[in-house]
Image: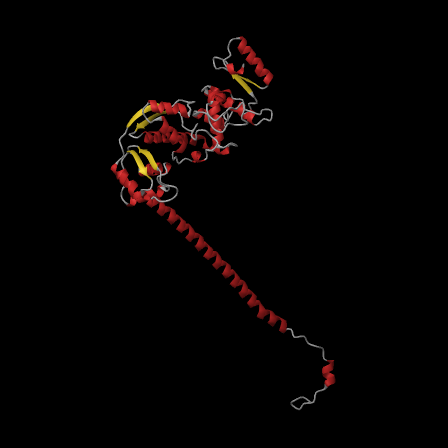
Length: 388
């Protein structure tokens, strides 16, 4: 009997089949599924929160870094400052032009910030022209005060720097014209502060003169300053600035080149010396020397004018040094620089020589080259005595 007093027929119940509890499993799954989804949602929420926190931290660090750099620039402190900077401001220069000039001389680091400062302070129309010697620890306020007072109205003199001129040649030219003394010029060449990327990339420990080859040859109106050192700095900056402007036209080709800009300038100086200033031959001359440079058959470039470079204890002599010399040997023209960047295509010659009339003879083999030399000598049309 059961607990309620009814008699149970055990045999009948024994014959009944077992009925599975269909609802138990689904109930269990339904109970567990929300927990898993909840955990996933919590995990996603945690990751999102972590990403947000990281973004906030990164942005905060960037803002803090910018604020530190901007504040230091505004106040004129830190970042290797301390050297006086000499610069000229042309009459009618805009604040934007002045700001860029200040950056080029290393007086400031953030020209856009200086322009904003000038705008807020209403100094835009008050800046004057002239020659300025800045202590680059002045900060924006000190710089602005000097600009509003006006710079020295130094006299100017027209000076021509010829193509192929070396640092020694330029020093003599500037001293002769009263721009600066040789000693001050050489000191600026070696140690002057000039904010150009190509100057920073010069391997100073390898070359004899740091700026050899980078002082662009042209005719300039240069300042005659009271201090020789100021005149030297301004003269050099003018020549470097001109080079920077000139190479903008071929910057894309320079960037695609397999050679560094320093190597290009070195090759350009050799091309300038070898071509005798003949633009029509420069790309061919450059091709010949690149062919030699990239050939296993030539241990050295063998450029005759490099034997005459008076500095470096023979390191610039391409009859003894392997590959390119440590740096340029003279100031090349724009045509030579362009030729060094884009030499004559499909020009598979390895030798050339010129006669007394500067006619060029290109040959592929040494045998052919020697034959033309013998011919020129027989005709008394040979000028390279150091080949004898």
